[in-house]
View (spheres, rainbow, N blue to C red):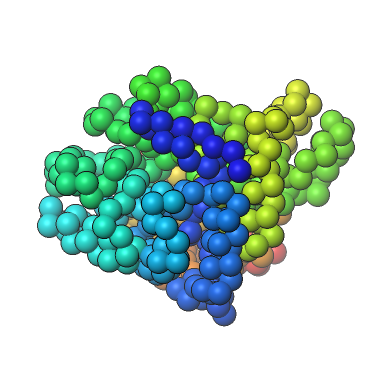
Length: 378
């Protein structure tokens, strides 16, 4: 395993971190983690040098932190770095911060948390965070030794990222970044801004939720053109590793993924992307972008919909299906929206969303297209 420094204290962390958000489950129930398989994965990663384990309050229906706590009891606590996140959407007052944090310590069976993040910040949640005095809370946790480093994970547009970045003396931040999302959310520019301020960067979704792991068959000609020997997973991860980041988080779901990721992390400084790799990636980006069905950036300016239509969620599933030929998974995921009455069928065509969309998307028409595809009506 290879290591890089994180924070101004230059803590040495493995270049590969384990995100405990897509663990193997029993009977396709996301709330019921397969503990045996998960423990085998964690032990393999730990034995092979992975020392950064990332979880969150709500992962796997609030069971992920507990599982990690059980694993921590089997090892030397000081031999790993634990990261978890404060669920901003569950906090309505200052006391909620304290309540949730103490719950997390109990779940993790630990007296402290190494890396603590305010979770999934957007413009809206950031404003709420400020109103509830989260900076005071983080400062108190640090002064008491309850957390060592404070950071935030981010899911909004670049201007919001800049505002958050300059709002506090952050030790690190966590952003979504992969070769298809270079200009999405914080993107490469956000990475550069953070590093210029001396803030360490952790990358999540390096495979775009697994979509870059299995590319459409039509992309084979691009890979063959440049004689690419790397697998799609290796190609995508190498692209991220070449950036000025501290570590890459992978939400591994089985032992095969663990083995492949560890093998690459063992040699990452010697096996960088080549000129042909970069040319192939540029063509892959162009090819995949041409398959986008709707130019939604998930900015959520259209939300909340007065009729509870999850517009960004629908468009995300629509795009993932058409870009990556991943219809089965996204049709199945769409059923969840239908069951919760958040699907396109709830649209009354009031038009309120269209006047708010900065991309000028014909949302009503595109919702009908998405609904037809995701209901498998074609």
